[in-house]
Amino acid sequence: MIRSVVRGMGAALPRRIMKNADFEGMVETSDEWIAQRTGIRQRHIAADDETTASLGEAAARAALDDAGLTPDDIDLIVLATSTPNNTFPATAVEIQNRLGMHHGFAFDLQAVCSGFVYAVTTADLYIRGGLAKRVLVIGSETFSRILDWSDRSTCVLFGDGAGAMVLEAGEGAGSIADRGVLAASLRSDGTHKDKLYVDGGPSTTGTVGHLRMEGREVFKHAVGMITDVIEATFSAAGITAEDLDWFVPHQANKRIIDASAKKLGIAEQKVVVTVDLHGNTSAASVPLALSAAVADGRIQKGDLVLLEAMGGGFTWGAVLLRW
Ligand SMILES: CC(C)(COP(=O)(O)OP(=O)(O)OC[C@H]1O[C@@H](n2cnc3c(N)ncnc32)[C@H](O)[C@@H]1OP(=O)(O)O)[C@@H](O)C(=O)NCCC(=O)NCCS
Image (tube, rainbow, N blue to C red; front, side):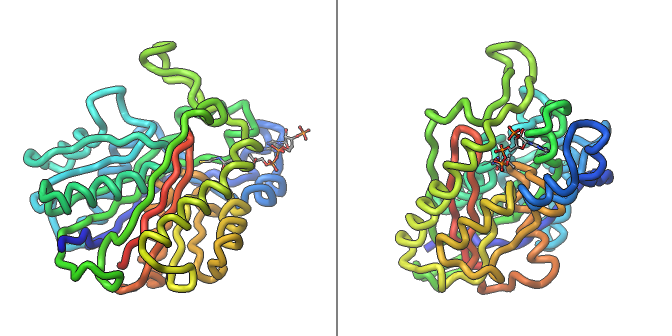
């Protein structure tokens, strides 16, 4: 059977780093509060010349280099983002053009912080359905552009960045020993719309709007939703937490990551954490964390890796793959 196998990873971060202490003159907060409640110590913030398209392009080029491929080898680009350069055309098409790619097709996918998990699942179906052989799956965000910088309960939490993965069609035996995407589980539930949203949009206010969040409410739901969808993925694949080599969760809050891993029985040393360095980069957070763990040699060929994310909507999901 066809499997979607990871061939390369890449990342891109804005040049400017903003430390927790840099907020102290802007809103009533402290490095200590932010670090204790969230685990975040710094985040990258895009300059005017850095956009979702430029960061996505840089991450895509890094992933292509890592894969030993060029844009000519790619059939499809799926970009997960909630902060596109423009309402339309899709920023994926802009990235396609920036890469000098004038064949194949490209589109954006919007599932907020779950975007990358949704995008990997989507790319896997295009590959297994025979519509694409090699897919660039990108998560790129510039959440700094939609933050209310006077709201301390949200502005300290988010950052900008991009990560990219090259998925390639490969042969598998149909067993859990195969390399590639092995199982996935996706969920959404719009009853939670008002707990995490942007208060503007083309069809309502005609403005871009700002991010609004009831943090405590999101926190309350997060661990249960994350663990449910992971247990569904484990059961679809016939594995347990003990079989995993690496857990790469969405990087929103260290306390949510710790509580989820604990509830699932995933050992602390198997959890990849980058929230301290990047903050919450929404759809970019999982590929940024994956890139870090691949670059430093933690994730090796043959390792069993679990991706997970949860975000606005709510949307949530998990993907199990063998590297
Ligand atoms: C946002 C979050 C860090 C807040 O932590 P918390 O422990 O729940 O804190 P609370 O919201 O209960 O607020 C506690 C107090 O800190 C205050 N506070 C909020 N942000 C603050 C900040 N940046 N600095 C200092 N104090 C802050 C609140 O106003 C509140 O004060 P009060 O008790 O006087 O009303 C936490 O709720 C969270 O991480 N939620 C999930 C968010 C998330 O992951 N979203 C993305 C999902 S994709």
